[in-house]
Length: 121
Image (cartoon, rainbow, N blue to C red; front, side, top):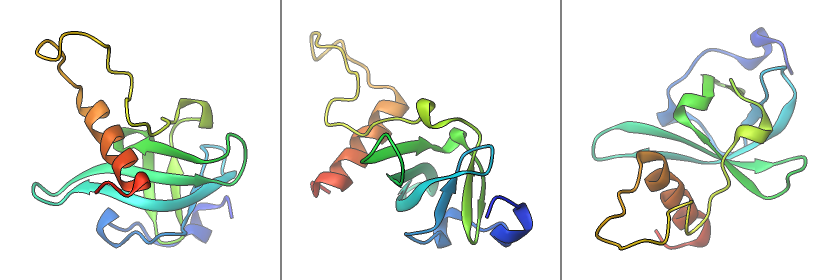
């Protein structure tokens, strides 16, 4: 399934289905789309939550800028598995005075990914 013509036409994230294969840059399948994360209010694609098919097991988050193409039968990443993010309830936010902590957009997306995975949405 690593050939581009096997992946079908390019599609919008809005019609990307759960279970579509996620591929590393070399074409190797690393997992499947578990959930498409986007901000519906402003129509902005955040990325995808991946159910991993190989170590590391569990879920990983591919930020929108880590995705090269979205196609009917595959999502092609532009980074390796080691660069994907692990969704967590505390995505690297420093324990500081809460008034001084400014979450980055990535931290906000990781928190939303965690909320979806944990059922807190």
